[in-house]
Length: 135
Length: 135
DNA sequence: GGCTAAAAGACAATTTATATCTTTTTAGGA
DNA sequence: TCCTAAAAAGATATAAATTGTCTTTTAGCC
Ligand code: SF4
Ligand code: SF4
Image (tube, rainbow over the protein chains, first blue to last red):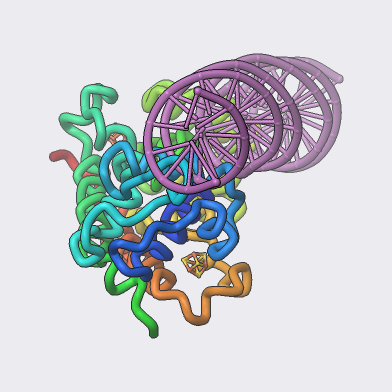
């Protein structure tokens, strides 16, 4: 339970790497993949998702590559994770209460809501800036 | 990400049902399964796990069935969840840091530790007693 | 011994995760 | 314009986890 997938882990590695570069620097996907040790074709898929929602900007052709879509202090870990993993829902009744006909009188249901809130809170409090800075 | 499996959901439903019964009442697996709307064979597997670690007591043969292993106020949701889902680890480096050679200098790593702590904290603060009481 | 019910283990279907490969589109430069 | 670079898009493949079911065994009661 509660485990980040490889996709999520790779996504974070890739975009944190970008966040550590100057904002206007265009990076080759192949370079990023090599630097963060992720299968290039897999990272390509991930960055396509990022690109669609503007988390990164992409440029095709010669001299192309990727750069961060916004300043790293304005991108939270929550955004990154939810971009590739979907919304954080510890139980499916949290996403769609109607999914479970017990959700009305269920005492467990609110616990999952709290879990969701706590996790989102932690992730929302962390930006790519902090993550990319030297320890 | 972060989603409880059916197994976990079923496990909670089953044991919360038991927690709502008198502590010395022996319940048939088939009755529990019917009451909480879970496939009986699946619930059997789950209760076997519970039984091994003492969360429930089992009795075979005529008049057999299951009862809670301890008072419901002494069983936390965390125990129940970890019993069937395994330890709560939002990323595999939290379970085994050596798993990732970056874990030493990684800024993301401590975030996952915090997430783990928050989730475990919430679940550890909820007992079967509260969960089984009428709303 | 015969009935009941859980324990244990093997097996199967479906879904998710984890990629890879190919083709297409876009852009830059000679 | 043609060639090359690089991302976008889509199809496909493999492996693993999830979600069960079925059968056989063991234990307890009458
Ligand atoms: S029984 Fe409660 S916790 Fe489980 S799915 Fe339904 S509402 Fe959610
Ligand atoms: S890179 Fe950091 S967060 Fe990712 S697995 Fe390694 S230690 Fe954990």
